Amino acid sequence: MEHNYLCPKCRSNLNLHHRIIFAVENEKKERGLMLLDPRLGHYDSETHPGYHILEGEKVEFICPVCHVSLAAPEKHENLVKVIMFDGEKKEHDVYFSRVKGEKCTFWVAPDGLKIFGDDTDKYLNYIK
Image (cartoon, rainbow, N blue to C red):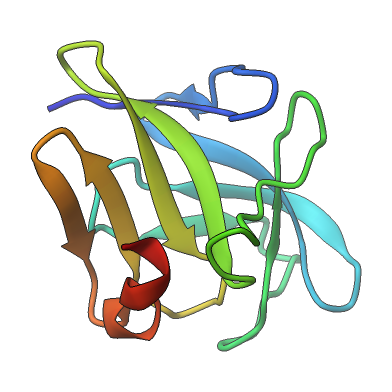
């Protein structure tokens, strides 16, 4: 199933060449770009070799188009929100952890909440 991801604020497309593109900022306030795998439950990411994010570090995810933070503090300070259009062109909310190394994704699907990753227990009560 092919998914298309959008910024919840400006609704710009975040996908390009089988990756999701984000502007990011580490805890040292250094900025860069990060590419994520668009498949739910896959946690591969790429950054420039000179840009470092440490394991356990909180990353600020920013829309590369409108430059707004994608944080979802209404759910939890460690979660990020994007909009996903599925293969049937239906809109869904997707939340994922902004902590480097945490494997945690929530898809608010038409038939209920779908969860991916070993670290979802930390945030499950905030999503329901």
